[in-house]
Image 1 (cartoon, rainbow, N blue to C red):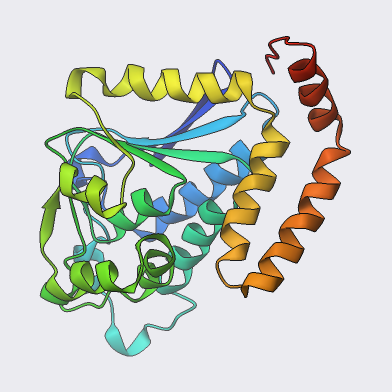
Image 2: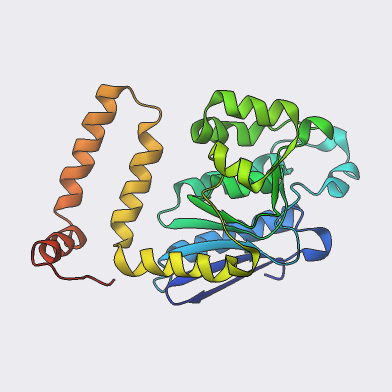
Length: 257
């Protein structure tokens, strides 16, 4: 898997984009290997939280336009292009049963910005830039719009997708596109410390259920959402993880998973 690296350390699974010379542009091979890495991390008992990061100065510039330009446009179909791989990858990250944290050390553009945005949490350095430039490069930001509307709402999504402009890390945080902006020299250790904290203090299955609820209730009516949440709450309370955490809380004990 030369385009993507995966390893675990201290219960954290690290998935790293490894095309720095191409600014980690997404080609079919990289997309395929990312899907395989997330599948491996989800099944890995040694991994409780996942960090998505990249090598080089750029997080990801999006789709590999050189690859797209040389393709036979008459032969392109949804089944043989990034059009099929990208939504599958984004949906995989969005629904994964483990928390996924984006560690953004540089520009995250177009589909690269989508990768960061679809993660559950995102940390970035002050110099990182974000944006969806598709409308300026002969493309449309169709796939990410499905996720972006859910994350930041229609108004903010229109601002980003219709302008095609890049924004700063601070503005991305204000819009809700990312969660934290940290000094460049502190990025790696801050992300590792946060991932370590939630992997040790929170039960993996309870975080997975919480993530599932947050994703699912967005498309439900208020009544449907409350009924669904109540059902999930009932089942969660009888799991060993919930029973252990509640007992520890009542006994004023600290639990480390």
